[in-house]
Image (cartoon, rainbow, N blue to C red):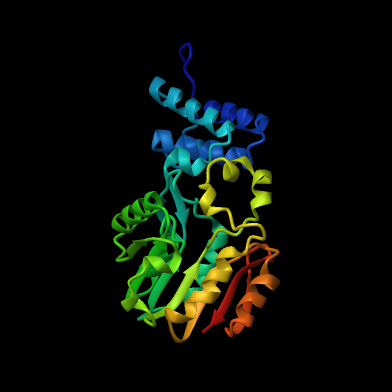
Length: 284
């Protein structure tokens, strides 16, 4: 190995040490994923060809990304890709990064049956919810709404890349939709902002400093958007239409009460992989 040269295994080990010192969660996994991203390699290359020498360009780019990850820039923003429900979504700083918790919502929609349904996703961000459902079920129609034009640009790019026929509308919640769509949806989904305004400063830096503030802030009690959905969704759903919403793990009681008071039926709390309350289901 020439002066300054570094092989695959040594580069990864150095990166893990740096990431651990910066208290980055899942340091080894992050180091491997960024190495694969820069080198175009596979996970097994670490074991089959650990002596592979990185080019100078690969080395420089890799450790530049490691330094950025040490500064707590999210992994997905460094690679430009977030994997969600088996699909690769393009992400940038204008959208909430798709997370595994939200897969619980998508999986439940599919389990309950979505083929032939018209679906509306509120606060759609990257479009990961309607696009994933459309890719796994033959929806008759799918739409997503968001206040952010930058987020909707990202969502439209994802729909095009993944060949999913989802339409996107810009505006404040249901105000974004044409009046003629009232009463036409079988399913409404949403992962709305639900963090209490006062709690945002205490979030992990990856979330606090890099997810869009408007995608996090649910107001003083974190419940603003649930109240709006409860107030307005009945006008947009068919009779017996279904609603699926992601919630914070301590919000099930409050959100269930909000929807019960508006006359929604069959309210159910769905838990995530860790056994925490994660999704509220109800019917119109």
